[in-house]
Amino acid sequence: MKGSIVLLVLLAAAAALLAQEKSQITVTESTVTTGVVIVSAHAAGKPVELQCNQSMSGCTILKAGEYWMVRLPKNHGIYDCANVDLFPKSADPETSEKIGEYCLIQK
Image (cartoon, rainbow, N blue to C red; front, side, top):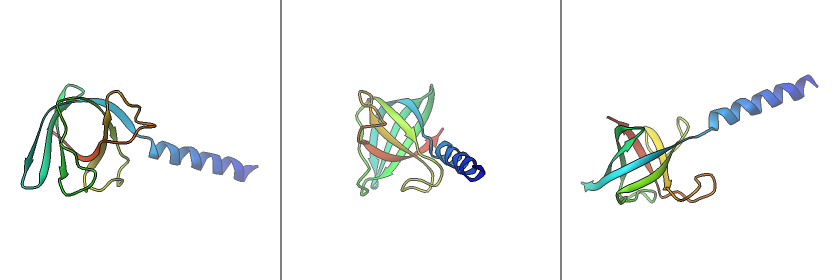
C-alpha cells in the first residue's frame, strides 16, 4: 500500500513536470537572414521573437496571424533555449500536428 502511494506521488510529479504551457501568440512578420527564420510576434502583450534554422524540418516561415504557442518543458526540443511549438489558431494543440518548433526569445 505504501509503495502504491509513493508511485502515485511520483507519477503526479512527473506529469506536472511534463505539463505544457499554452498561450496565444500574434505573428506580425517573418524574415529569413542567413538561413535563420526570424518571426516577430506579440505574446501576452509583449514583443517576442521566434527563431529557427531554415534547414531544420520543424522550421516554417509563418504568415501574419494568430497561433497557439506551447512552451516545451526545460531541456526538451531541438534548440538550446526555451523551445516552443506553434499550432494553427483553429487547431487544438493537444490533438493537432504542430506547424513548427522555434527558439523563444523574450524582448
